[in-house]
Image (cartoon, rainbow, N blue to C red; front, side, top):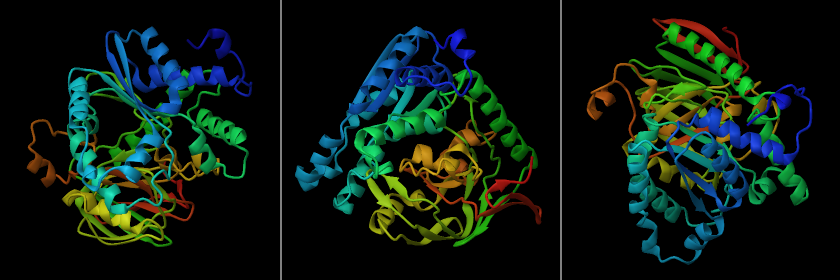
Length: 423
């Protein structure tokens, strides 16, 4: 546990790597999951994240977890599939495993994902095979994904620095220095390098809650983003709810799903998005790079889409299902967020989305809606809630983007040059 002695140390004090790793594990359990005594925990992680998994596991058991189970993934074996597997193998996914995970969540297990895979692992691989594999995986994981998007259980995502990831974030540094620099960025963004991380997260959550409350009190009908390459109106779903920071999950446990997090977010209306928008950061998805995205929406659906890199992959993503070419989330992040201020392109959505306002293709979070209990899927669609196998965030904010709230024909400035102008 973070000791009283440590909490009295000034924020500028230096902690050892082992201390910071332990703090990250503790914050992930105490702040991220807020795991309940007797609760099981299911972790997924890269093989190279063993040291962090062990810290998380230790703190989970100290917090009263009854059982911690970890499923590891390995970049090399993932790549081996795309190089050596027969063509028909890319329509296959381990449905049995996905069903087991969904059952665990239905029975009350908490969920933790540790990210850190090689951002461009599948560079040069067949886009058609990537799309087929992603589609098969998305279909298999749909039952578990629905539990997560409904926020039915407490869940959390954190990051672990890995050599392959660090090499791409800091290509000009020697491997050991690159890995150390990436860890430093993760520790800072995750707010564990301060005197009292738990207190720091409490204050940060309060600030995000205040911002979300302002947006909920304002009840805007739509948002308008404008700037270079962007003139986009995002209608908001009927009965949308803004959220950010810690929230109470369906099982009654207050948790922080993302560490780090700088966003407030809500559900857009699947049929009321119009105009053009350009990405402001590259998207790294399932081991592939998609850069300089530009799309045009008509009545909620993307009708034109280009990218300077990865355009084939982007278009295959949009063809996943009917909802893949619509958006299920809009999130607001000031340009001055700590991750943006670091000037680091992490090449990882968990971090890059918290440096910039963003939208997400695909599935909406029904937790960002009011009065939906008992509604059928068709009734949710009528309220504007998008449905899809995918949920992929990409960044549209910068210091050149303005944002207005629209309500009853009136326009209220919300952001100018990427910064909040409303309290």
